[in-house]
Image (cartoon, rainbow over all chains, first blue to last red; front, side, top):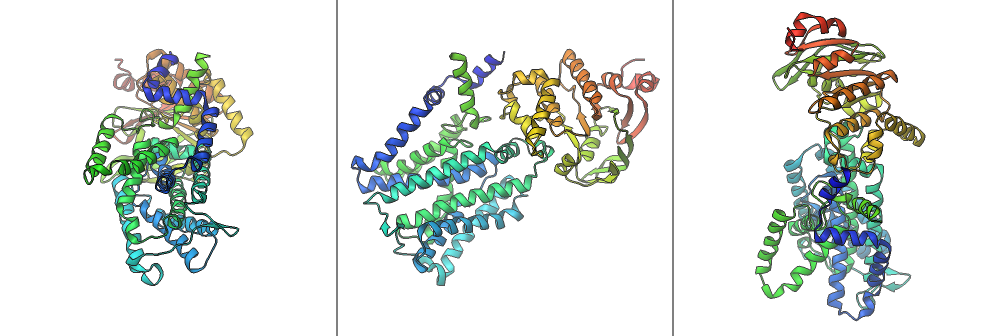
Length: 344
Length: 235
């Protein structure tokens, strides 16, 4: 009986079989992916392409940051560009004004974003749904206004120029020597591993329980507000980390780098890739960062196409491309494993 | 063990409970029966801390627990298996149970609790890796009860465990409720199925529109003509 049920939920679509394949050859597939990613710089791509690849990495991290909050705990934030900006400005200012090493600047940037997440989360996470969305939307705008008007520190609308490249032991990481690319790989790997570890822990289970049913979750002894604030802080930390990598990557930031457009792009990545999945974030970032580049010939119409894609997605695959049946997105590996066990 | 005195609960301006008095002794199965809208679930949710607008006094093992949030009730040893078996559908059986032991940190204790639940509900053990949402109704009810037992409660609150289940499954669930009680867990059972509830309980309270209208030994109530007529459908 249970076999039938599993099959029903498992479905038999193309994506399912792809997932099954990935699950079966997990090790070889990940090894090949890792090798390809490491070898990319030697394939002679132009700096333009390398830059896009690094941007994909940045947005993958941003997606994973928001995913912790939206995908697992079920809280929507429309203001993640704010945390992104806080991380970017903090990192950039530390490196520019104080000449601090990138690693330290990135950690401080991420921690400051996390602190802002805590300060915003404590009073607001008792709010639900739409109300929380409005508060976070406001937060994103406030952060931008601060960047714009705190001129002595942030240099106002003129932005921060000539942000130094990260350097390790006197060796500058740039696009040309692929240092930035490898730094991106390291950061993405770190964030991915931490997200996986969090989700598979007791804390991660409590996050999912809150998303599924808040009342039932409190009856397990989970303190809802505390868990939500924790998720908010983790989410802001990851987003801030991505920000403090972004600043030296592009070398110039101004308040308009952190508008609502950025927040909505992050949300789109999470939704398109599949809320509550880690690998979905990679796919979402790849699609949504590459799309505007390859569709330049559509000119301004590309945003129309972009909108249409999202609407069509919501109609036909609301759980995201790699999301599982909307109810159980993050369960796929285990389902697939069971199916494998049955076959062998 | 649990003493409720003058419990009033409001939903906005509407008074759902109009002064409930009840008492549960250690080791008992006490049932609260009544028709739809009498306030059975409200009473349970007030005790469990889910409804926070309760006024009056609720004492558990001598400590006042009125107005305390649900997550601290769990720490005191009160567990609720909610109405409509609110399991976490996307999580597996094992993960659901693990969440039940959320407040426990001692690995030995957790695995002992797992053993205990799996002994009571062997069916759950067979379904360990299955998503809770794909279980049958009866299995979900077992999971909801099993999950409530994972934190080794002193007092187990059961809300309509028979809801929407086939009669033979209901019998099985009620047998299990008696087994759980024999292991030393005090149980407060809220039921619409008065017949079943009175057959397993030691004592019973009858709730009518927010007030206790009758109370006594379950066997006496089962033979009371008023109860027979109103709740058991017997003349």
